[in-house]
Image 1 (cartoon, helix red, strand yellow):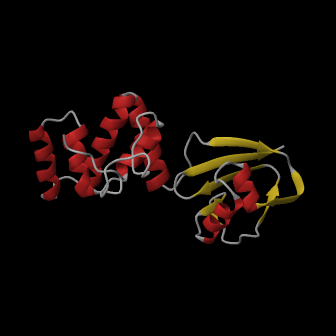
Image 2 (cartoon, rainbow, N blue to C red):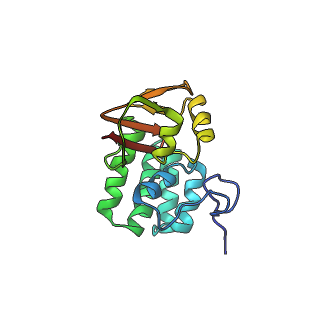
Image 3 (cartoon, rainbow, N blue to C red):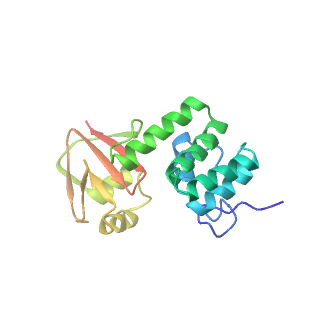
Length: 186
């Protein structure tokens, strides 16, 4: 029985290595992780995971290599199929739209976590806010993410680890490419 390589394309798919697509994950995560598979590896996923016949997979590969179809379109087909297997076709389509909205249009997802925190006149230190919003595990990780320009506040990158956020109204935080949170101060 062949082993399926994980998202890293090197080691077998494994939860302990963090290179896996979990069958109990949210549809957006299954879709997004499938889209992160390399173009070369996606045909291995087609062979081992898809319901397509071997001839159909070969035809897809030939069309892609001939430039008749873009690799992204082929990978989207795989992502829809895998997401639809554990959810349904409508949910898979919604996951695709959400993926496009976030990664192609650089917009915010429709369904993001919401956190309500107490308002404060003096503001809140950004690393603490990231922890309170459950976007990072600790202020050390928050500082690293800020220094790596991986943190956005209302769409604007923040690179100052001492940044104070006005703790009033509503803001949208983003850490990395996939972690979003709407924070409402009351």
